[in-house]
Image: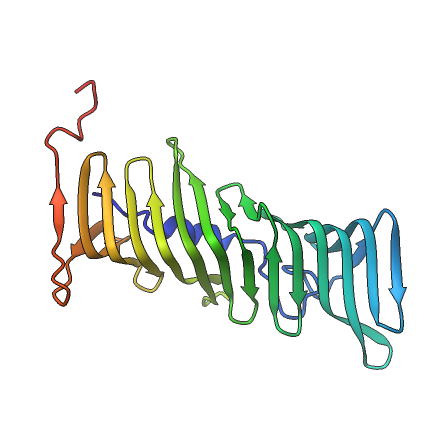
Length: 276
């Protein structure tokens, strides 16, 4: 059985997520050397005593190729160097859309705490979309800038269409990815975890387990915790599965400590199509 899609499809999706900010940028993903433009249909308020800007009704903050749209935008700032303003927190509320070159993120609320290097997006119908995949979650998205860590909470799900039809999906209670800089200075995937009630579905297989991890250094993925692979009526069960994405091979293991054995049930002729 081919389980090479175990976590690789999720890795591709996470890499294109829009909340990839530098700690100095006002808008997540923006260029800190470019100006920030804030617009709104109704009003742009400057509360000098509280050091807050509030944009109301169809508000937008834009910096370079990245923008944040919402009903209300609040920016907290502090005085820097005696004359300049330094925004340290932005809060977007109501119909939030974060747009970058390659993707969009949708939610009801978003908070970007620049000092902490942390962006959080919450709300109903929470999702990130690009041309290759869609990421959804019930609870929230979190991005930690300095750590290069993106986390999706609450039955996080990644759906990736296949060129030949159908989709590959990865679903778990939590999905976490860590990006690190390569020799060219680009952030690339280092590792990815799927935690809790993991379900991987392809057009031909369904794989379930308790925990999965992918490491780019080895290009291998492991799935543990009552692992089951189903392909039609055929089934393979064990305590752990190892998938080598380079060689496209997988191995299933039992557990000597618990006495769990590897089990496979295969039905002759089940792989045949009706025309065969």
